[in-house]
Picture (cartoon, rainbow, N blue to C red):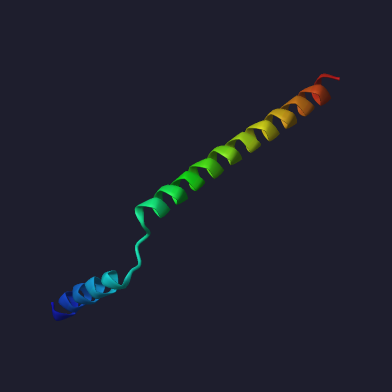
Length: 61
């Protein structure tokens, strides 16, 4: 039981040392992740459309 209590004490002490991002940084990072996700989705959608078009033309000839 002593080891468990010590674990929680050590965890709490380590959490006090963490440098948490500011609200502005969190918003900026979240916006960046969302923008990159949307950008990659659009990129792969266009790529899929082009390949689908190419394969359709290849098969129908």
